Length: 367
Image (cartoon, rainbow, N blue to C red; front, side):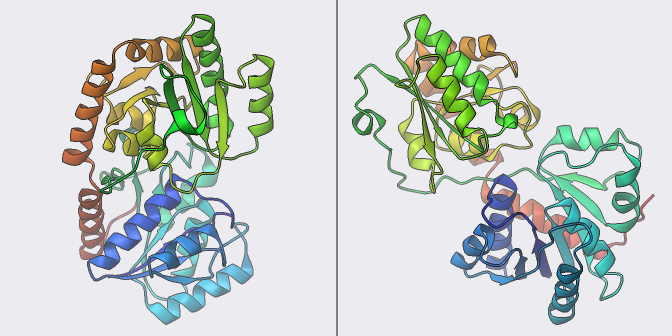
C-alpha cells in the first residue's frame, strides 16, 4: 500500500496523536508499505519522521481553505499515487477529501485521538459523504459518534494505541537530582500545560497531602500556555518545594521509571499514551476515570481510577497507594502484564494494517 499520513499541527507542537502517527507510519514502513508523512516543513513532526528515515513532504494547511497547501497536496497525490490518506486534523480531512476527487481515488480516513466532531451540521457533510472511515483509539469516542445516527456499522473503528517498553530504560534519580529526603514519595505527571490536563486539581491534591503530613513530591513534565498560572497557584499555596515544573522533556520514560507513582488528572482524554507508557514500565498509576483511561485500567487491580475534576478524589486515590509499597508494586506488575498482552505496539500495527487492507478490498457505502 502507498499511504500518506497527513497532519497540519503547528511546527513547534507535538502530542499523543502525532506520536501515534509516527509510530504507525514507521511500523507499516517496516512491513514494506510505501509511507509518506505530510506535515509542516521543519516541524517537530517532520524531524521525528526524518529521524526514522521516513519520507516527508511539506504539505500542511493553516486553514480549511489553504490554497497553497491544497496545490502542494495535489502535486503529492500525482507523484506518489496514494491508496490511502490518514488525516490527523479536521482541516486535513476536509481538504484531502476534496483533493482525491480531483486527483486519483485514494481512500480518506480520519484518525481521531480525541473527540473532534460533534452532532452539528457543519461536520455532517464531510464526515458522512466525503470520507471512507474514522478510526479512534477509544470505545467511548466510537460510542459518542455512533449516537449521532450518521454512520453505518463499522464506519467508526476502534484501534487502540500501542506501546512496547524499550529495553534498558534507566531510572531518573529524583532524590539525588532534587535533594529530596530519603522517605520522599515521588509523583510524576506529563502533558501539555492546558486546561484539559487538570493540573490545577493535582496542585490542590498536593496541598491536601502536604497539610496531612505526607512527604509527597510532584514533578510535572510539559509546556503550555498555563505554566505561569500554574506556577502562581503553587506559589500561592507555598508548595514550591513540593510541586516542580520540568518544562519540555524529550524522553519522559526515565522520569516515569524513576517515580513511585504516575499521576494523570485529565478532564478528558482519548487513549492516553502517557498512562499506557507508565503501565508498560510497571508503574502504579493514579488517573482520572475518563475515556480511554477506563478502558486501560481496572480500578484496584492494575491502577487506581478517580473522579475527574475533584482534588479530594485525587488525594484519596494517591493516599490509597502511598501507604503500601507492595500494593504499588503489585499494581505495577499487573499493569505491565496487561500492556504486554493486550496493548503492544505490534498488536496495534497488526490491527491498523488489517483495517487498511480491508478498506482497500471493499467499497464502503456511506449514508
